[in-house]
Amino acid sequence: MVYTDIAYCDTVLSSAAWVAATDTAKQTAIDTGALWIDKNYSCSLTSPVQDSIQLANALLSDKYINNTLFVQPDQVIESKSVKAGSVETEKTYFKGIEPEDQFSEINLHLSSVCAVNYNTVFKTVRV
Image 1 (cartoon, one colour):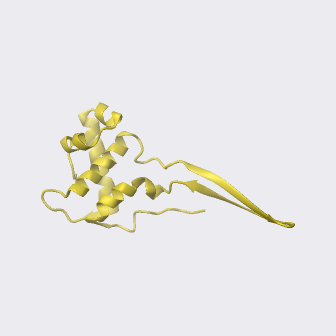
Image 2 (cartoon, one colour):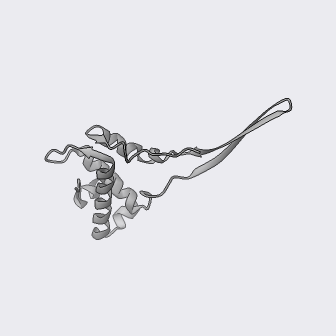
Image 3 (cartoon, helix red, strand yellow):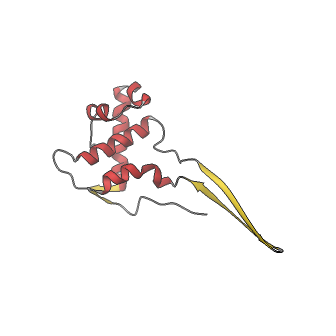
């Protein structure tokens, strides 16, 4: 289901990529954003569609147009070591934005009117 349209997105989005995109590209972005919502949330819709769902779909559309919807955020490998006498230990780990953090604003809008599909979202593998 599509939760918004090009006219609404044009009023709330202002990124250079969105403004420059063709209507066909914008509609593809909107459709892709709606698929992301449908995969990750179960929403009870009203007529008209709730503003928070429309805005979430628009924000996802902007991510798609800017090629950041399916890209993992930059991860930095960090290492710390501790030495006490002759014993030394070192821990290496990823530091940076967690994958779900890139959607925090979108999740905030959707969580007020939709239920999370826990079997599909927020799966982060930690090593």
